[in-house]
Length: 170
Image 1 (spheres, rainbow, N blue to C red):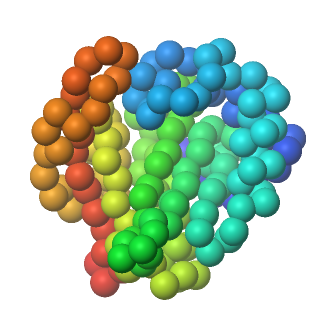
Image 2 (image 1 turned 30 degrees about the vertical axis):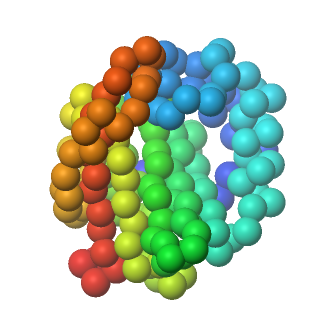
């Protein structure tokens, strides 16, 4: 199944809400997202992404079969890390296991490295999220180590893993 990344459109809010109103997805994301996730929540997020500084936030919808399947974004860090950016992503459950997320990660990394001065993109998936770790590995990211007892999610102290991709590796 082919996928594309593209700029968000306000009309994507309904598909976004449908994808994020799923506990299985939210259990693998950082806290702060409302549940259930409404169409208005989606519209607010999309508006924020469309008005963001395009050299700081690279946020895209992932589409498959001309429908929004998920989200992928790269977020520039600050200060001494100003040429480093964090990758975040999710995909609707019905698209799991189809290679779409790996392809979307490759596309956004190529885009960011080509269009900006970013030299390193990193991601910190929860250690228990094996599928997310595999996405990064298949997209060419290097495993750098485990961040032990690094987060609290759903009342449990958990490890996270650190992966990175350098501009020179693409």
